[in-house]
Each structure stands twice: as C-alpha cells, then as structure tokens.
Image: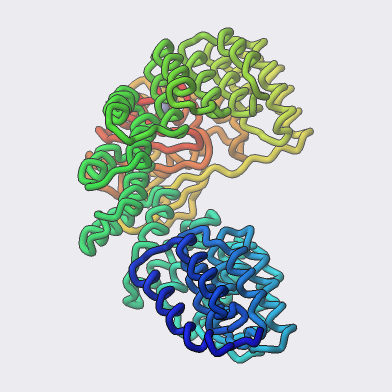
Length: 597
Ligand code: ZN
Ligand code: ZN
C-alpha cells in the first residue's frame, strides 16, 4: 500500500480530528483509540503514514501512566520512513517518563535514530534521553551522552547542564555534581534544587543549608521542592531556627496548604523534639493523610509521649479511610514499650497482623523484645527472640544486651555480645556497654579483657560530636573541644556547672569516662564529652530558662545522662538531647527515657 493513498488523503484530517477531540475532552481511552485505528486501516488510511503515526503515538504516550508503550512502539515500527524528529522524541519521552525498567528502551531508540540516519537529534531529544539515563543511575553512559551533547553544540544550554547535574546528584557523585553546578554561568531554580537536594539525599545537610544561604543571598526564591529539601536537611541536623524561618516563608507563600511540605514540616518539629509545634502543624493542616497521622504518632512516641501517641492512634483508627501502615505500628509498639504497657503492646501486635494484614517486619519484633526487656522480663525477651520467624539482627541483640546490663544478667549479656560480634565484628558500642557493666560490678579484670580485645580487633570509635543551634548557626563540638572562639568562657561555665552539680549530689562516674572508649582520650578523666561542652555553650549563649536542644551522633553515656538531669533542675532549663537511638527530654531533674536507653 502506498504511504499516502487517495482515500487516506481525504480521511487523514478526519482521523486526526478524532484523536484531537479525544485529547481535548480528556478521553483517555485505549479502546476508543483502537476503534479509530481499526477504522483508519479499513478505510485505507495507512498507519505507515508518518502523519497518522505521529498522532497515534502522541496520543498513546500521553495516556495516563503507565502508557501502553509496546502499542506505541508497534505503531512506530509500522511507519515506513519516520523522518519526523517529533515522532522519535515522543517515543523517547514516553520511555523516559515510565519507570526505570523502560529507560534502556529510550537509549536504544536513540541509538536506532543515530544509525538510521533519517533524522538528527535536536534540543528536545537530549533532555528526555538524559532523564532516562538518570533513572538508570548510569554515570558512565550519562557522561558519554553528555559529551555527545557538547559536540552537537547544545552544551551551553541550561537543560543539558541541569540534566547532567541532576544525573550526578542522583547517583550520589556530589563532587562532579557540584563541579557542573559551579561552572554554570546561569543557575536557575532547577539547578539550585538539584544540587541542594543532592546534598540532602546523600547525607550532607550542612552543605545543603550553606548552598541555600547562597541562593537566598542571590535573591532566588525557593519553591516547593526547595522547601522540602531544606526541611529535611534541617531535620537531619536539628537546625530548628532555620527550619522555623522556612516555616514562616511557607506561611507567606501559602505552602502550608501543601500536604507534602506540611508533612515534612511536621516531621522536622517532631525530630527536633518540639512535639507541641508538630501538633500545631498537624492541627492546622487542612488535609491530613495517613503519613501526617503516622508522623505525629511516631514523633510523640519517640519523644516520650507514649500515652498521647496511643490516644492519637485511637482517633486515627476511628476515622474512615485512614489506614495505619507498618511505620504507624512501629510508633505504637514503641509507645507501649516506653509506657510499660506489655499486655496492650501484644494486643496491638496481634491487631496489626490480623486486622490490618500487615506482616510484621524485624523492626516490629525488635519493639516487642524492647517491650519485654524494658518491663524487666529479660528471660522472656530472650525466649521471644528464639521464637522469632526470622534471624534476629544486631539491633535486637543490642536491646537485649542493654536490658541485661540494667538488670545484671551477666550470662545472657555475654551471650548477646557474642551474637553481636558475629553479626557486626567491627562495632565498638557493645564492647563499651559490656565493659561498663563489668566496671559497675567492679570486675576490673573483665574490663581489661574487653579493652584488650578491642585493641586486638582494631576497633576504632567514630568520634563523638554534638550539634547545637544559636541564632542561624549550627555549632559543632567534639569531645574535649577547645577550638570554639568562646572556649574560655565555655570551660569556665563547665567548671561552675560541675561545682553546682556536686552540691546537688552529683558524683562523676569515672568508670564511664574511663572505659568509654567511644571517645578517644580515655586517660584524662577530666575531659568533657561533647554534649556537656555543647550544653555549657548553650547556657552562656541563650536567655535564661530557654530550652536547649542537642543533637549527638553517639549514645549518651551514663555520666552525661545523670549530669544533664541535674543541669535541667539546677539551671531550670528543659534540655532535649537526640542521640543515636532516641530522644531524651530532661526536665526538673529527670528524663523521659526513665534512665533506660
Ligand atoms: Zn558522656
Ligand atoms: Zn534519658
């Protein structure tokens, strides 16, 4: 059949019109299209005709996801001479916008185009192609295509630079991402968003915030994407003041009505230990989905408001259309465990499986072990672990080890430690726990044995550091840190603190300092851990009675814990410490963790 018969000349505009009508009225029906297609074939409008094919493919690719790509490709392969670049681009776009399984088809179609020699790629081809490559997270292929882009003379176009930047950021290659970004003569909001988000996603929130400050100074206004990245960065390092500024900005531009950004904001407050603010954000949200409910439930639970978390779950449970997910139950079980509600915890665990058909994951079993262990039922916790349908992980053994040290179960403690050692040979925290337990039982030879073993196994500690925020700046302190410009004042305050705490009955637990090889200089028992230095700095830098928040990368030691409890009383300050595993809300001389962490 000739590509364009006489009938087809007459009918083509009509068929085109039909397809356009379908699009205009938003009728996205594959059946309707198949009817038109069949009609065209019957009346001699050849699908081999490029014009006809163009309309069909465009319609197919624009169908709601996932578009019928194999159908679209079949239409494409029937076209005798696809000399229209629009057809190629449409199909490449279709593949690029599907999930990553289709990305490779976009690349092979591009190769086919080059080989065919029928058309040359244009400015629309490369953005789609690079989008597909980004989904494949293939840096080398991306670089190859980028060099083609440059050779074709499109290198200076902002889309090409943005795509490459996005590719690097997406693959976690931050140094190359930043290089591309830095060289861009004109950085638009897309570029700023890619680079900021790249740093947030790859665990560099400080850099992300520094970039945001630069963006702000250039007068570039953030959009919803920037806001979400910024809030996540703030949540990671506990930069509450900046987070609050972002919040104010969100109110100004109406972004608080956006469900996704409000959820991230809620999460930020919860992670900074500001449950009241999280609650306000939650209450003011016009739409709430189960993510919002879950964030607040988990936020309440980990911040020591177990009863409130459970109450909130009861309300959520009674609302129609809101289904709890597995994370919601992590929050609930955590809450039960911290409130000592053993029976209720088991009941929720049962409901999760039977009522909500959620298959418990290892995190849920971990909560159950914690529930029993916290209630002092250490042996039952051990039996529970033995009956679990999966292999217990280090977190679970560590929970048991923690409980054993609190309840003086030496044999089980040693057993747990051996299990941990097998699973994670180079982790040092457990040596520390066990050696602290031996130290508290005055078993000095065992302490020595553990320490020797640590040296033999070459275990090195991550240095402990604490972050605090004053004004818009985050200050970082290491153990024994004297690098801060206000160091002298800080150490004077530390001395005063220790003196005042002693009057309240504080006795430094030398054993903790001595064997706590979490930090390095164990010889000097007077060296202060980073959280104490950070708190002293906050006492001299912030108004009286204002709350203090500290983010620490390691577990708080027993000595610091009892010191901070007294600081909260003596200096009348609420102190929130977020450590590696949980929140401690210190107030009036006690802590929300009830000395069990
Ligand atoms: Zn400490
Ligand atoms: Zn605590």
